[in-house]
Image (tube, rainbow, N blue to C red; front, top):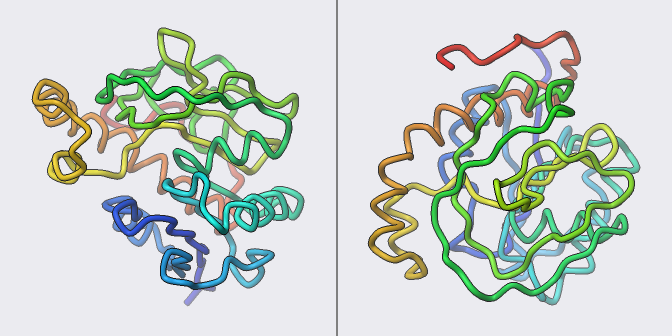
Length: 233
């Protein structure tokens, strides 16, 4: 039996866990070790003892935000595969020189992103479909990428939605991990947005499940050539 691949998961908000993405990762053979600083658990200095780091949303302006930023910086320096979602993606970008601005207004809801040419050579986004459905739900915006970042996907309006820092740290500003039922419970989405989210949900799963599972394989040490495009797309 091969060595188990484990990911250190930082859950900043009890309402913003990994959701269904946890199942996708476990399906790919990854075990999840979750730290919950919102319950008083300390954010470690490094992801040592884990093959990957996953930092979730809800960490903006928290007491442990600096600790989380330091953890992500160390993971990048150690080439530990890192996935930063929502606010954590912006904290990651800002740590390396990116610029983030407040952006309080909505609307929130489904968006379609387009991959950039550089994504074709990316380990986890290379085989993904050219368009990616996501759920936009944030009150800050990454407006300038760091010099060390590669833009992988953007919105038609130019939002810097998916990027990579160096070779093994990925940031995703929007969401894919929440079901339509979870979105309804947050209270930030109007009926039209929820209806559209339900309509595109199967496309979100079809695109993002393989992306997350490739992340798990990269964490397990896989660097071999990837398929040209995901099956079914």
